Image 1: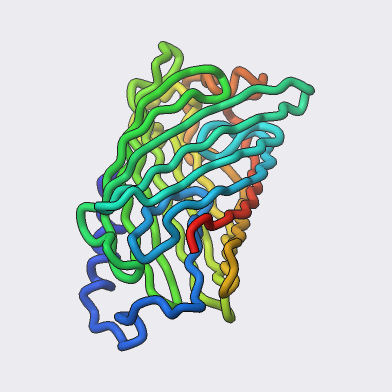
Image 2: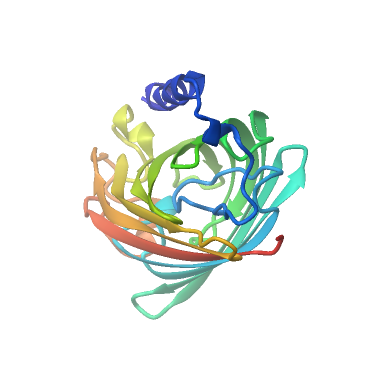
Length: 280
């Protein structure tokens, strides 16, 4: 399943990049044109030498009956830093403070380093990269992960996706967790892009009947990004329903037990972010 899903992204992106581009697509960014640091909220994109070099972002998330990459079950406030290190390397790190609906608070930390191996020197065009990272989630479980990124950017539209392979250091979690994401946005007017985002988590639930997190979960919802010209700021909003595509024989997961919810319940998540470009 994971190979079919990601391969379809790669093939689609390569077919698009092979088409003849218009002169506007091949030109460098105009002096007054802004590029969003993080256009998608459920996929991490790499930066290039012609895109913003360093940025700070603050995001808020509210979710019910969700966990993991979909968001914190309750309210979540996140601060993140993202920067271009040169040589097609991107650093991304964040810290989260979660407010549970029962009044408790908890924290999470994550850091990763990504490198583009195909493309990555210019803002427009196809890019393919690989990254490594580590995190500590809201249930105080540590993990290491690898992320494969694929994207295609053009002046009027953008496509991006990730495949994340995670190993959590807990006996109550799966040996390997798979998370995929895909986003598409088209320019509506001026600096406003709109489209959709799709994410799948615990996809091993499609072939493992006893998947530890309760089964494969999917999210699909609208996505909006605004990066005003001549501005250091950019804004993103996304979210939607989170539902179980499969149901595991494991009644509850290690992650979801922390908030006392049955793994068979569907939920939703809403996320908004503002980013500030430090390099102009």
